Length: 314
Image (cartoon, rainbow, N blue to C red):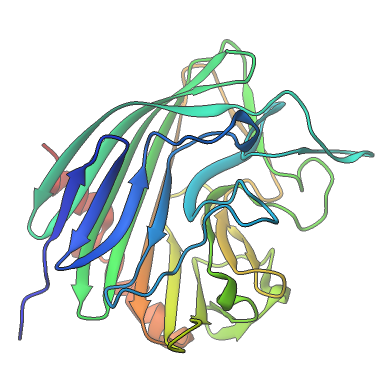
């Protein structure tokens, strides 16, 4: 059997490019050029399968602050680290002077056992200039088999504010079933109308708001008609596990394990919020059973993204 290609990380000055063989799997853009309205923050885009199919969307006209995969929080107290307007009870979405940004401070790269890892430090700063969080973020990538690669995402956000910060969603502020916030993936336009996968079932927008340890999305590409599957898994030790999910297919394709969907989480001064996720990118059309088996393998002790990050750390 041909060994899986190693993932190689290259720092290009404004982004890290992760490559396996001849395919650029993903760009991690840590110095975005976004305007403040879009709550500038690092993002993963473009994202491709091992076969080269694009499985992400960047700045769609309907929500220009959607960028591939990004750690995005719409409700941090009264601040917005998601982008665009803020939901206000009784008024709907209102553009407020509260679009904060996640500022890149530094990054270290490591490669070991075929995997690549980047460890980044960031500061979270409100539009008014207040420094409210320090973050340590780790992203890992490894090829699992000839058709699947894995992305690991881990964040540790330590509050630097002098008050309790409450992290929530539009739902916690009054909008029904709109609990988005967290690690958010926006899929290609051609994935609209595709299948949302969950343990023991497939479906559509009716799955939004349900709890599950993982969810996936199967879609068809324009052009060659290829089928790809993206699966996101919540780590069993996350505080909200299994989380509610913000998932859509009717208007556009997206997935988000949303740890603050319907209940806000208070972060005390000096406290650290710790969240971990695994994303599987697959060439082909997995069903629910296939996706569940792949998640189980990825989250096994030998395959956990945290263990691999520790092994690859400098």
